[in-house]
Image (cartoon, rainbow, N blue to C red; front, side, top):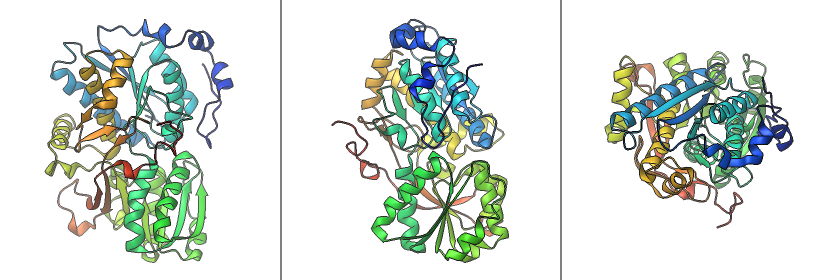
Length: 421
């Protein structure tokens, strides 16, 4: 089994480690993208590799990403594919580990001959996938939040980022929360790239409102007990507690914050408030908590593309609705296949050129990829969890309290990211 050493703080796989990996890595890198294009035929099925953490603390979100990604493939095929070429989704478990993700990505490229890659939930994991894919000339459309993936040091022409990034997500939530709930802010942060980048986004947004950071507390990924962190936060007396964590960490934080009476003392906010964790935690624990999201199923009231996704999901999954991160799985695959349709082939250079110029409506209104960094420019929703008395139906979980309609002004500039323009 090939293994990789990965710096979780920086989120980077070093070139020395990469070159030292097995599976003929040195030979494949030396041959470069041309070597691999011979294996990715321009006829036959369109193969899309999908590494996802099907096991571990993000498994609920990852499993719904797979469900929604398959829907995108199904709808593409039902519409005739690309001049009769059908798409296939090849799913692998990354186990929320950058080294494991790199190994699975190598296998998908070299053994399975995938044309495209999507998936990669977790900031550090997606950087690992991106590095392997870029070395081999395979387009990768990431569906996990990251600021680093857009920066010149990690970006290549093969890199696309369908997911929102921390600058836009934390920025939208911060611009809503700070003027409405107070300027004394405490941070409880998962100690890895996702958490750190979200905090940076909140602080950036907070400059406009002169926020005062009164406490900064970090915790390991996969923390089960948060009781030792809350007394320090309570002693600081914040108006707002921002928790930058994800998956089961989010659920554990919220449930234990209720036990400590935190919600009665301050407003709790998240950069991303997860549908899956709200379903798991229940209305009482989540009541009043604010967060950001890329998608909420009730967008179908205003967007036909959202209704198309929701109806397909209901038909396949017992009347359920797609989650926010699940919808990323759909949109990430949709963007790749739409690019292939507009290019008329699966040739990487042609698809890249098409994706750089296309306007597309995957699931919530028109989007586009900014050319300098291939970031998807899109709307951000700010949501608040409903009290049980206001809920109408099983999936009526949130109120949308604000919408940022999307624009480059929500992003860091191309120059700031290190791109030449």
